[in-house]
Length: 489
Image (cartoon, rainbow, N blue to C red):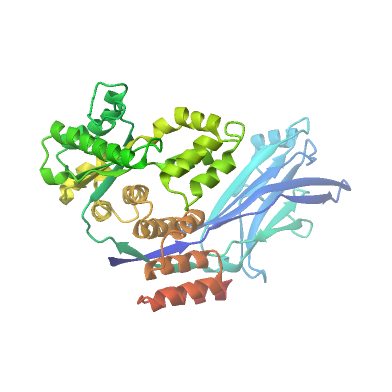
């Protein structure tokens, strides 16, 4: 297992949205109040511009037909030494709108404004406003105010000033040292388990494929082996069959039946396929399936099995040998015994099979093709190699790493690597869930430390970093980031 160190930069949001801001204005000349409401006020900082967005809600704004109202957002420093006037919004009455069209807009605002005519019925009306200015250093701590000119005279002494909010500061940049784990190469040996309910003639063990429902049950095994034999990437390593008998009849008799029936099924499979002799493990058997009987009884209700608790106590009685145990149930609860004999015992007579097989090793080019159709045939290391044919943290890269975690859900390595992707994407819930199953390696603790830092769980982040450091990892970069984040917060 190797470490793969990736340096990542995390940026905080670059926009702020304020709640609606109702601004009451007093028309000095008319001596009545009117109101405009600002909604969705937002300031965004891009690479080279400062952008202001807001919605003007004009529902309660009164404008005489031959008048206009002027609203100008202003960006200024707290001490007022520097400022920038964004374009003005002129809300006009009907006559004033005609005048502007005929004679031009008032020179006070003509060079930098946008106009909207107030609806004649004075009803609901909204105007979405946006303007931008080239970014300057002094914007860092600036504020946004709204200047309202109700007289249309441009006299700032008669204008009202309303505070909208601060300019959102340039987001802090924090560097996190993500450490991925390079999976170790492995032999791709897999085990497939299944159960077939083969029916034998009473007191016989000869395999009869066409007896009762045997053909369908045998296909559980043969269909699987057919698929494996047809796949050039698979080699069958071992076939093991374990037979179970039900508890009725003497124990020694059941032992003989279960053993010979398991051998019979093994021979049938051996004779059906041209496989090396060493592939077939010696047949195994359990003479009486008391485990299956107990599970079945435990799941029944007392309506079905009135003496369920008593029967369970007899089954669990370690002082009783199998034959006396079965006899006791049969004698004490004959009706329930007959029910079990008819409805439960047939399912206890089963043949479990285990097929051990191996996928061959793939070259990188082969693995890239196999990934498209049968990714489950790839080892965790092969999936890692396929992922790294793409740009790190690209959509394709992330998709392969997600596939690796899906195919190997118990792998701490897959969990750590996918958690690092989730952390880069700020999907903290997903990262936290993955890290619950990531083990206690240095890489896992490093990822947990980054998670805790993003969650502002400073003490836990420090503990996780100390554990990663104790595991041999250099955590100096993440410890420095932790200190920076604490200072800012």
